Amino acid sequence: MDIQQYIESGMLEQYVLGTLTVREQQEVEQLANEFPAVQAEISRIQQDLDAYAAAHAATPPAGMRERVLAGWQQAVRASEGNTQPAAPRMVASEPAPSVAPEAVVRSIDSAPSSGRKFGWLVAAAVALLTLSALGNYLLYNRLKETETNLQVAHTEQTRYAATEQAALKERDERTRQLEILRSEQFRAVDLKGTPKAPDALARVYYNAATRAVYVDVRHLPALPKGKQYQLWAMDKGQPVDAGVLTAAATAGDTLQQMKDIASAQAFALTVENEGGSPTPTLSTLTVIGNI
Amino acid sequence: MTSKTSGVDAITEEQLVARLRARDEAAMTIFYDKYGTALYGVIARIVKKEEVAEDVLQESLVKIWHSFLSYDTSKGRLFTWVLNICRNLAIDKIRSRQYRVGTRTQPLEDSAAQWQAAPSSFKPEHIGLEEVTRQLNPEQKQIIDLLYFGGYTQSEVAEELELPLGTVKTRARAAIKVLAKLIR
View 1 (cartoon, rainbow over the protein chains, first blue to last red):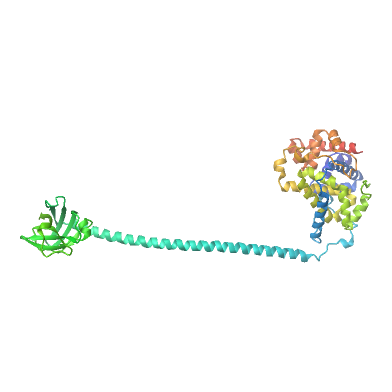
View 2: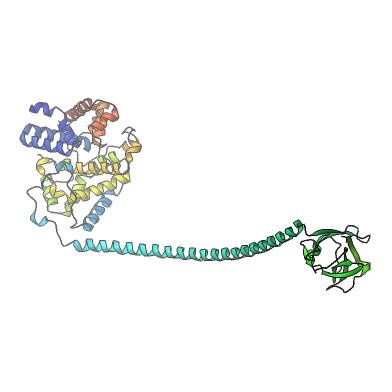
């Protein structure tokens, strides 16, 4: 190898600048051991760069000397006996032969370091416990909230169930009524308003075979308190009681089945006292219609 | 290897090394007075923030103390060795904090890099920064600063300055030659 050429290659500058890989560094160090010229060049470059660095000396902030030295002392005391940090890369070699024998690593310091570790564990445990308590509190609150919500949902569901049941019942009733209206066995009898109540209108469905009678109110004048409409079947000129109308039937909300009638030629509604009357009050005749 | 003594500390480098090796804590104060401002200047040049530089200097002292037994006098002077420790810690710092993201493309002379040369108790070759700056041409200075203070490798410098690697090597060597002339 041409040593002069090697010296001028720029490799040694890189070595001193610390920009070489570990393997390249070892190479340079090996050559420096072998060739004094290489070693001398390295020393020169080091000196040059040291001077360059020293030229950058700067005025430190006030009080820095005391702070840094105190901080250094504290750090050294705190880590006394701990594993020593690795050597910097430029001198990453075996320790100098002049190592003082009393300077070997002391092993008695496992206690403070494990004590510190224990301290960390305690701190971690306390932190975890606090977190856990906080978590439990939050979860408990959420549980309470959920229970309340569930109760509300139950109430709601019960209400819906009741509504649905009522709706189903009503539907069944309507279906039954619809069957009557569609049945050919029933005869529809329109009852028209008398001069006293010209707007009044009702209809009776009469099945002569089964004797069934239904009344379907379209419109009737409002009743005075304590009065009810009563249906009469006129058979050969004689009025036959067919029963009183419920409030729902009077309002026209539903068909109402009345008492069975064996024979009739006409139907009429009169206003009677609540509960009905054995004979019709003719002066209150509201609607009437012939079959 | 000659040892230099300053006016303040009439103690040779060999004596200082011996006392540090003997774990003499008082020797650390002497060490600080001898090299402190120079080391601080280099660290500050790299990290560019006073308070960070102070932290790094303190970390460096701790590291120097702990790894002192691995200092090999045959490999170089004490200053060279401690300077490398400081440089490496400072460069680790700027890398770990990702200083580089923001500062990489800025000229090194920016911001806190404009350090006023201070009277140093350690002036081995008695050169000032102004003189150095005057003698080095800008390209040489840039390369040296990037390599020395920026913690860049030569290939990174080549990439950064868009120069062939060979040119970077030549310029670095030439720059150090100029420094040598200033010193001797």
